[in-house]
Image (cartoon, rainbow, N blue to C red; front, side, top):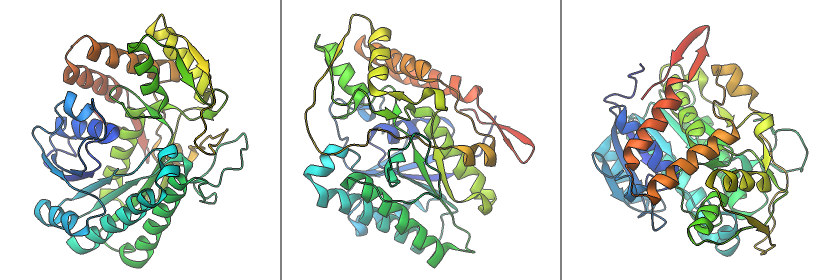
Length: 361
């Protein structure tokens, strides 16, 4: 059992969101001293409230664009490890509010990096961006970490900018320092507890609870869908390895196997089958350009760490449905999250320079 995070001071921005809530839940279960900085939960209901994520951690409400507030949290918590997840993450929302999207996703990243530069305590920093940072040529093979960064829409482009800002800070301030910095470009994550608008699994859940058909805008679009735990355990792995060996710092794609890159229509049909008694329809609703084809080449993280995705797309959907059914029935959400995280972690073994490291909660 890895005890790396036990007693470590960890700061998570965006901790009230879907991925941030899952990440804080895992970190707390592993004995980390967790501080979170984010706006209030972005949805109602929210995973943050349902799973009582704010308990047993220092949860600070604040705007990532507010440098002084963020700086105060860094000074008080003196983090050793930082995960930056705070973002405006919705493509269609970025078309409506591009200025807010850029301020949050670009200036927010600058603020985090500046706090890291000034505080002196951070040994490992992971900036979570997106698979959409690449200049999308709609080609049928996966993008690699050295492909050009130039997202099309304001959300994707702002995340490309976040990558560029991070690279500049690394070259200007962190090269040769005690602070290791990585950016991680994860595919589309699914799993229990996501209630965001304009995301396909939450749309499926809302339709199921309202006894309606699921409306799918782009059923033929191909995306690298994966369970949220795939991405989170990759973040945890990278942060741990670069903490001890800064040469592991860099940019990494995290996505499913080629066979699990499915169309949105296929994903929705899987959900309908697992839920039972649910159907879907295709309907265009506008909202700006969205890429039709997107895959990631994850050779780098596989070769560097021996990392492999564990849950195929069918299992990922099963785990999501299990969570939402538990919530619908008033079940023990914290217990279920512990079970799912433990099941994933107990099967996660990665080879690092000939060694085998098992990460468990």
